[in-house]
Image 1 (cartoon, helix red, strand yellow):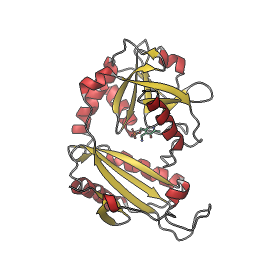
Image 2 (tube, rainbow, N blue to C red):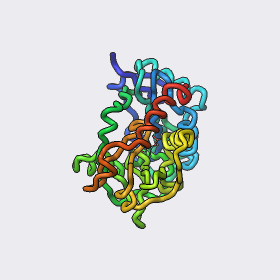
Image 3 (cartoon, protein in one colour):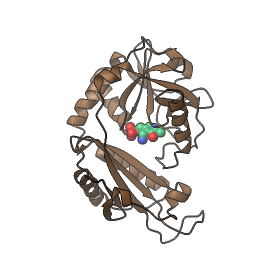
Image 4 (cartoon, rainbow, N blue to C red):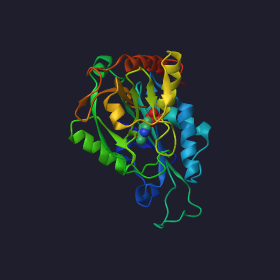
Length: 286
Ligand code: PMP
């Protein structure tokens, strides 16, 4: 079965889907995106993702390419046409096509594309083993709260991680505090059992998975605090993990050359992974 993409009002075969060479997303990374998890054919945390999309667009003064109700219909149509049970919907909106010039163009319509693909839900036994992370300087811009398609530093960081045999790179600010992963939010559990993730602000993306997990952790009675933590604190943590719509809760058992905790996924990470999977199958899906 061939994949279908959505491009500015049309459903087209994925292999033929294209946009104009003067799309500002292509020339200036002048656009934003969202990745929404699909589980059992339903969209997980759809509304918070669309709220974040609206916010990213408004921060860049890009008009919404489409009102929310039809947008939600197109997302469902993408899931249906691509026969996705477990997977993702990718949404990208740019300022549109215009003669290449830095200022915002006048009378240009924002462009909207969507793709959808399969993604397996996490394997619990594999998650238990954990993966490695390395730390790198955060060389990104000062508005990482905007989910912009300008991901070059993230791409370079992820590649550096993969070349070192690691799953993710944890980015570190000038003061030695971890900001976030290249495509994930970062968490630790302190030796006292306190769950910690950096507070939201312009240095990190306000992860939708992050927000959902904060609620789920509270329901489990886990002590939680939002604050910055240093690389040194992470190396001495009992547990570490990363979260995102596509990596769910992924335990980190090694950072640089240091084994975290006992070298296996910890009980807090596995507990919130389990509750997230229940949530995705039920309350969070629409
Ligand atoms: N931080 C960054 C830099 C990301 O790219 C992502 C994934 N889009 C996240 C955090 C996690 O966000 P979410 O839980 O909404 O996928």
